[in-house]
Structures are given as C-alpha cells and as structure tokens.
Image (cartoon, rainbow, N blue to C red; front, top):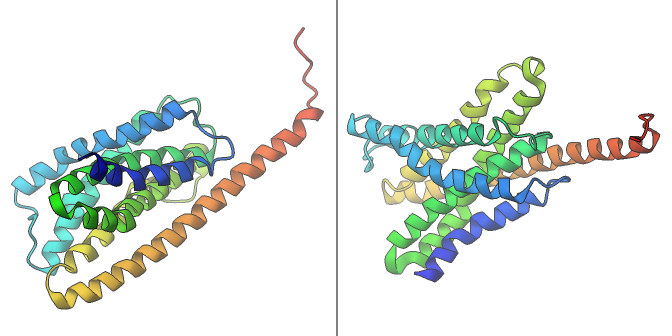
Length: 250
C-alpha cells in the first residue's frame, strides 16, 4: 500500500517542486503546502456540484456515445472541479500579503491543482489493486500534468485580473474559469471517447497525446514568460535600490 501511494503522489510533488523553484522570489513554503492541501479539499467540494447533477440525470459515469462523453467530461469533471479549485484559490489568496507578483498566482494555483491531482491519483491507484503500476504510470504521464496545465492557466489569468483590474485585457475575469474548464473538458472528452470502441481507442489516444503535447508546450512557455517578467522586475528594483533617496531611519 505504501509504494502505490508514493507512486501516486510523486508526479504531483515533482511538478510542485518544479514550479516552486521557477519563482525568482519563492513563496512561503507554508502557504504553498496549504494550497496543496486546499487542492485535496477541492476534490470533496467538487462532488457537491457533480453529485446533484449526476443524480438529476444530466450525465452518466458510463457514457455510451460521443455526446454522453462530452456531458460527463464537462458536467461531471471540468465544471465542478475547476469551480472547486477556483474557490480554494480565492480562499487562499483573498487576504494574502505575499501575493505580490504575477508569478505568485501561478504558483498558488498550481499548488491547488496538484493537491487535487495528488489526492485523486491516490484514489485511482489504490482502487486499481494489482494494476496499480499501469494506472500510476498512465496518470503520471497524462492526468497529473493535465491538472497542472489547467492550474497554470487559471493562475495566469487570476494574477492578470488581480494586478491590473479594470485595465486588464477584455474578458480576463471570465477567462480565469472559462479557459481551464474548456481545456479540462476537451481533455476528458478525448479520453472518454477513446474508450468507446477499439477504433476510437487508437485514434483517441493519438489525439490525446497531441493535445497534451500542445497544452504542455503552451504551459511551459507561459511559465517561462511570466517568470522572466518577474525576474526582470526584481532585478530593476534591486538595481534601483542603491539610488533610493529615502533617508535611513534614525
């Protein structure tokens, strides 16, 4: 039980380590860890949305057609899960003095998304029983990086709205939730459709891999751009410090 659990947690922890050390001015570890556990809580919060929708007959956990796959992907996963993550992100950052750079939003959103992915991963891997290794590898390559990518997008637009407010590009506030939902829903739809029959399986797998490749490439570029921007601002401030005319405190 210990080894499967560690295998389930490792991908999320590695990605969290990666994003944390991309920050030029690293966030307090306690807040990052708090965000990670907020992500685990989000798995329960999301069921408060998906559960009633399923009981009302809006989707089935065993879709039999393409439209059913799309419905369960969006109503059963993308919408409730991304809404829950955004709620946790807001609770974490609403009175957070350390949230003072654009890259910080990406770090905290990623911590929450990876906490969600880690807890979900543990459930899937343990439920797989003897097949835990196959499940852990497939989810490490696809599911966990997927949650990471959705979170980076959410954090990017959350920071944009927070720091620029009314002067942020049009639609920024809507994109905080809309874009992660769309990416998550498309991702899950491809995954569900690929399970419908052997023909869809091969094609769907290739499409999913390509989608993931493009998603991760765009995510990496976004991380690099915002990190570089934060680094540049920090260096400008550091260079200007010696010329600060503010008198020393007596």
